[in-house]
Length: 349
Image 1 (tube, rainbow, N blue to C red):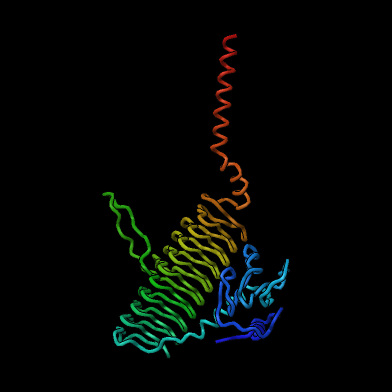
Image 2: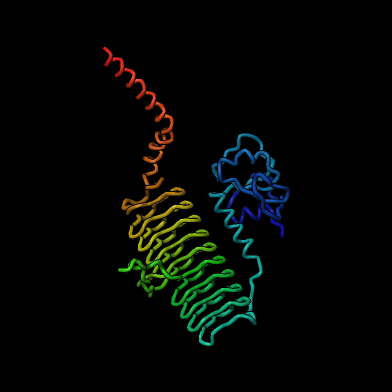
C-alpha cells in the first residue's frame, strides 16, 4: 500500500517540506534508505545520513535545521520518534488478527471466554479462568485456575500464567514470560537445610503493560506482586515476590528487583541494573546500565550510576580518578622508591 508524503503529514499533523506527492510503500533505517521508503531522524548522531539517504521521505523534528541541501522530502513533526511509533502502530494494525479456537486447545468447561477470543493450538485454560474480549492466546500458552485476563490482551507462544493471577486490559506478554511463579522463599532449618515457605499470594498486572520474552514475575508470599498500569518490562527481567512496579516505569533487559521493593512511577532502569530487597525507590529515578542499588532512594527525579549506586554526577567525578588507578599506583610506587632512597641517604649522614 502506498501513501503520499502529504497523506502521511496529515495523519501526523506535520508539515511537508519538498514534494508532497512523493509516495512511499515501506520503512527503512536512515543509513540504509532506498527510494520509495520512509525513514526518520531523531538521534543527532545520525544527522550525517540525512544528506546521503536515498529514502524518499524523512521525518524530522520541527527544530531541525539542515546544514546543506537534502534530496529527500521532509515531514516536520513535534517528535519524529513518536511520529514513527504512530506510523508503526498503524502498519501493525493492518495485519490480519488470528481468530477461532484450535481443536487441540484444552479449555475447561468452567472457564469463560470473552467475545472474539482466539486460542491457539495446544494451549490450556484451566477451571475458573476468565478471558476478556478480543484476547489473543497463541499456541502452547498455559492459563491457570481462576486467572483473570482482561480485554484486548495478547499472550504470545509459551506464556505461563499461574493460578489466581490477574492480567489487566490491553496487555502484551511475549513468548516464554511467566507470571505468578513461586517467589524465592526459604527458611534455614536447624540441620542446615532450607525449608520452603509457601507462596500463597498472586501477581497482578494492571492495564497497558507490556512484558518481554522470558521475563518472570513471581507471586507474592502473601498479598500481591503488582506491576502498575503502563509499565514496560524488557526481555529477561526478574521481578521478585511482593515487589511493586510503579506506573509507566520502564526496565531494560536483565534488570532484577529483589523481594518487597517498591518502585515509584516513571522510573527508568538500564540493562543489567538491579535493586536489593525491601527498598523504596522514588518516582522518576533513573538508573544507568549495570547500576546496583543497595538502599532506598527518597528524593525523586535523580539519576544514578555504578555499583554500589552513586548519583550520576558523583559517579562521573569519581570515574575521572578511578580509571587512572593503575597510573596512580605506578606513580605512588615510584614515590616510595624515592622516599626510601632519601631515607637511606639521611641515615648515612
